[in-house]
Image: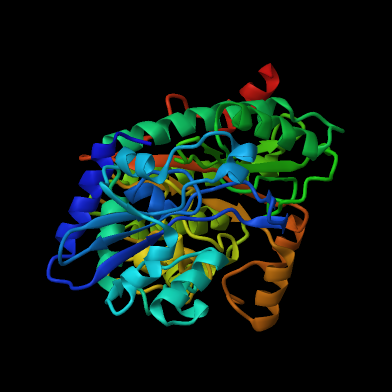
Length: 469
């Protein structure tokens, strides 16, 4: 937790932004989630909204803020002797309330009477237990209080959402300091992974070495590790293969601190230690796209426009390699042809969660009110399109992938038939994919990379690092 004054100030700011509204704001912390039965739960992780406004990293709590009286109440049950036998002495609910600057507490059974008959302002929840509890408290259905992923939750408080998103998009210095710390832990973890790339070694062994570093110094991985010689599969969580010569290994992994702030890096390594000429051509393009995006990041520019600039560079470079036929790159970008090679967006917000606040709805978090999400493959996958502001923390993660099933489908549908060199693309069906990802802070006059050291990124830096490992 930060000092209690931080959470008091955040709640006061939220109340100020909610001025004029009636009723109460309702917040639900997470509870333990059984893996097989109640006493064998999944690893504990607190809700991000709760952490932001209250900071208490314990299960089974709720809170209300009365928008008319200003009263703040923390709800929870003190442990009884049967609990203490298993857990040892724990802080009381009153002690937890004091730690976050709240003076009034009540047992959980008092929550339902407290909200009955009141207008309830809430944010979408992601856990099933909280969805059922929130539905019961509000008279809605569980499906009505969960975000649909992109559009959000129609029954959530629009004003509370806008206020919270606006606050959490701009990171304070104490938040930035923790993200920097997470990035340094991520650097250490990724360095161990790179050094572990040896022909014949099982991928799973490297994953274990990486996660051991993070578990020894933090909460754990900020998302399930992606470590694969099939980089064309974006979320490949299978790690059973031995490392083969001549492959490209994509390692996309983040560290999460005990305070729950996250990092998220991706690097792509030649398993043999050196890139083949074909691999180097594509890798250099992705590296230059990463550098281009970083050079353009500054307050006022829309990240959507940076994504499109990266698309244009990819088109130009693939034209040079003969994979895309001669033509106007701007027209090809407008047609969405880059989506064949970069089907995901350039980056996302990051903070208490690796994909910060996306449980509220990607469009609400990542798009300004006057922006519309594209239906194109690639551009439509952009999670962060907003005009950038100082204090935004975002990822810069371009990539190029050769996905045989996608290429064959586009070819069969006649998409880009006069622009894409489909016969030559067959030479890349066993290529895989390449992605390079850094974590970036938008500053008053530009941007800077987060973390005290940057992982090797250029093709020469990667080969030099692998030769010295």
